[in-house]
Length: 153
Image 1 (cartoon, rainbow, N blue to C red):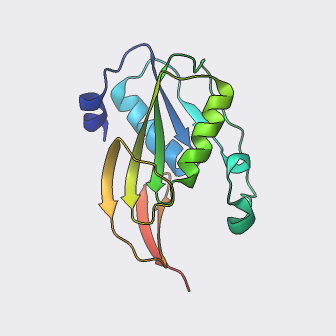
Image 2: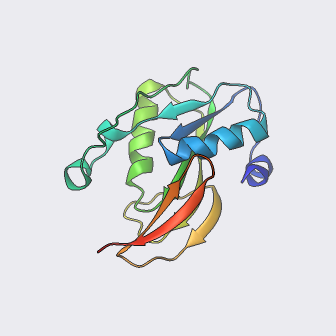
């Protein structure tokens, strides 16, 4: 994914990376180191920005978002572990825009899977999976990072 990001973007002093808790942060930490991005790594917890928390429940371990840089006119690499419905990414972008106006946002995701509900597209994808409606993929970690595929009972 780091090589794909380097090929796709001109990474410079205006580039910043933001990971979405929790799996996206684990991936972002590794990418941030590999790419040598100057700005500190930002993290988002989008729990209060979701439009589906009444259906899936509120995460009992809400973490604070940390954006240790201004977003205005920055090129943001937004990192998540799994792109499924698109709702997490929509919520993350809503939160980012509450902090400022980035010049651009590129989504990097470890896994892109079937089941999109919103017109969200990743710019960089590590792995594409076709899963059935009752199947879920989860990143476990942080050390080591492993992918699990589960079937709803």
